[in-house]
Image 1 (cartoon, rainbow, N blue to C red):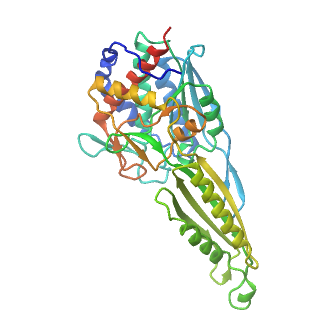
Image 2: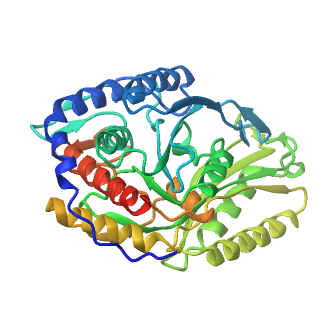
Image 3: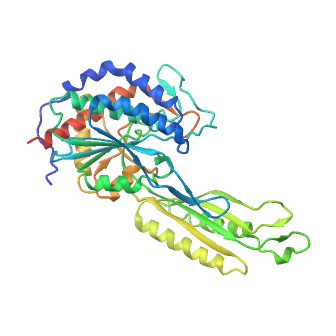
Length: 408
């Protein structure tokens, strides 16, 4: 594939109308954020999906609500549990076009119905605080208005596009991963609308992420009468978690022991201990090494009298590295930024996104085309409101550049 940008006339005139859409964009964003859509709030996710169906109607296309796979995880009792997740929204248009673009962002947030942050408020004249306001409901609004600009332009129909909005990204997209991969394999380029980094930079690479659960089982006994007959699973899991923590010897690799649970009444030797670990790696070779090291540590723990340990989990998001076609997208974004007077810089990050999964499927993508803000996943999460329109214009120009390249 020839990835040299072709000379094209300026398309900036086709996005100028977005300057008048700020109030609309803010209004839609507040409505989305004021509707709780924590990953496990299925009713809230459905309410947000209905808002999005109506909001995306003006751009046309065929809308579908898709069931995703259930989540299988280790419960607090150490056994596998199956949990239903929300529904995915898919919108497709021009399926017969020779070029197909995949646009993606999630509708779920980390804020459950019991979280203190439930509604939007203005922190000052430019900072809007709210649940998911930047991660990633601001990206939903940017994506929608960028598509509106494309569909209003002379380049409408020159490229096919599919919008996919999934309900489980904040827990690693376990239910939507299969569908995302299938759609990625049928597309030419991917654009994702996670927030830009706090300094406004776009993401060039991302670390891979794995979540692992370790279940230790021992033997319960009375802590006074039969203490020596017990086999303490909480002590076993703590020793294992410390050994895993001590694998943090490479600055590119982090192993975070995020949670340890187990036991009950303190006069009983506990027969169950559970440890949960988040792992981040720069390359999959590092990931494979860590999996082997953890497997070896589990085998050592299983060598102790009366202790049995199981390891569950995987790398749900492989590292996102540069693949063929990504550089071309970066140059188109830089060119579009130049036309808008919006300087573009690139930076790597330890956070993962569905862009990791798209890259693993071979789809070149840029995954940080959302607006700017900060303090995501906290009660102080905020959007820089003056970034909404410029980022929508940037994404719209990129869509138009891609459509112009694909035009016969």
